[in-house]
Image (cartoon, rainbow, N blue to C red):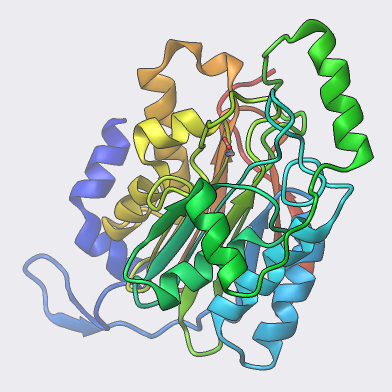
Amino acid sequence: MQKRREFIKGSVLGAAALGLGSSVSQAAGGPRKQEVPRAVNKPLVISTWKFGIEANEAAWKVLDKKGRALDAVEQGVHVAEADPSNTTVGLGGYPDRDGHVTLDSCIMDEKGNCGSVAFLEHIVHPVSVARKVMEETPHVMLVGEGALQFALANGFEKTNLLTPKAEKAWKNWLREKNYEPVINIENHDTISMLALDSQGDMSGACTTSGLAFKMHGRVGDSPIIGAALFVDNEVGGACATGHGEFVMKTLGSFLVVELMRQGLSPAEACQAAVERIVKKYPNYREIQVGYLAMNKQGEYGSYAIHKGFNYAVYDQTGNRLIDSAHYVNR
Ligand code: GLY
């Protein structure tokens, strides 16, 4: 901890060493020195979990044509939203305990604009409704029936999102009605994505059907700007996956971005945000939260409470899956 405090205290130097600050730095009492500008790793897209590999492919198609990061993240997470075999996002997502598939999603662009929808039913691509909220209303968030009316008025089609597989799982669950989220089992595998485009601009998106068999009306972290997603184009972006209540209680993604602003690397900032949960909530062993972040240089990193969280990275060297560092050793 002491080391981290010293690191944060020395954040001006830290930032310069990372190439984040101005191109000119001054060592204490020494002459002003010109920093050698480092190459920035762009374009770049990162996203949570194994299904991020396919989502990154779609995002890369946009980035590779020098497209905007905002379009890349929207197209990227569409893949998971439309996949009926994915039981934690969009179509095919597990329902709440009353049998309703309710979706949460948000999106944030390089100008600090953001939009979100929560407790939205019947729409395959909630992220695109969130984008419409951002671009075509004076608001940030629409929920439930109002969000559905807005989507339908904007040309989105009403679809039954409850697949036979999800319905069967729900009916099995009803036999015991045992509400017990299981770590890394696909009941909280949100897809969150961050992209840095060729222009050096960053955007992010997050979308989920939330915790399986949750209470009707429950909304998680995924539509909450600052919790599951935050982007500051001057600094970087962060996003989350896992047990949303703990991400919300600590406003995790905002925290990660602010720690990067103070000079921490993406991996260090994610670790500090996880350690915040561990310090404050003694039941941390029963929950999983993973953070993923990138800075403006195209450096990225992650940290999770438990082993098992992984993320997909696509840059000029290709698309690959990386196992996250984690807090609990078991
Ligand atoms: N992170 C997804 C949720 O808790 O709903």
